Image (cartoon, rainbow, N blue to C red; front, top):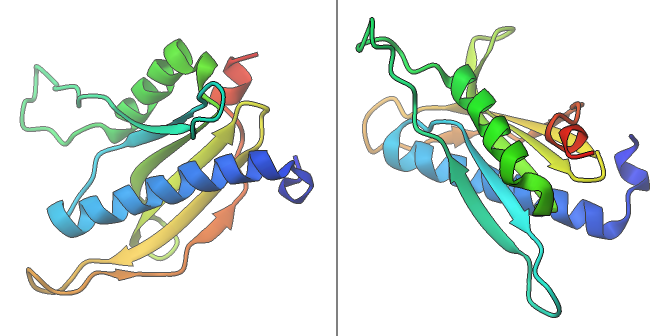
Length: 157
């Protein structure tokens, strides 16, 4: 699906969830040094009201056999998609953000996939560098667009 040919309302909805997710992820990194996968959903309102943005998160699942194991962020992202699919028919657009490691250059990055209910999807990757010392400055590279496949939107039809 060519994003350039999309209706302005669809582009606005995608930009709204994408920008909000990116902002929340950056804020979490700067405050906590880490963030767990989460979603931003755009809930249309009736009449003249502005659409409402909702933050959706799922708790990490503990491994009962290894309580000290790393949190399975892939499982959390899958749980988020499941939650969105269960309650998502009234959302106009969603974005799922996760903290990823870019294999090609061994860098951390924020990865956000935004989808509109019509099936348009867009992904953004924003590499970042943590400060060398606590309280130092975070460095966020320019976000880069990637192609994305609609997962949530396709489940709504």
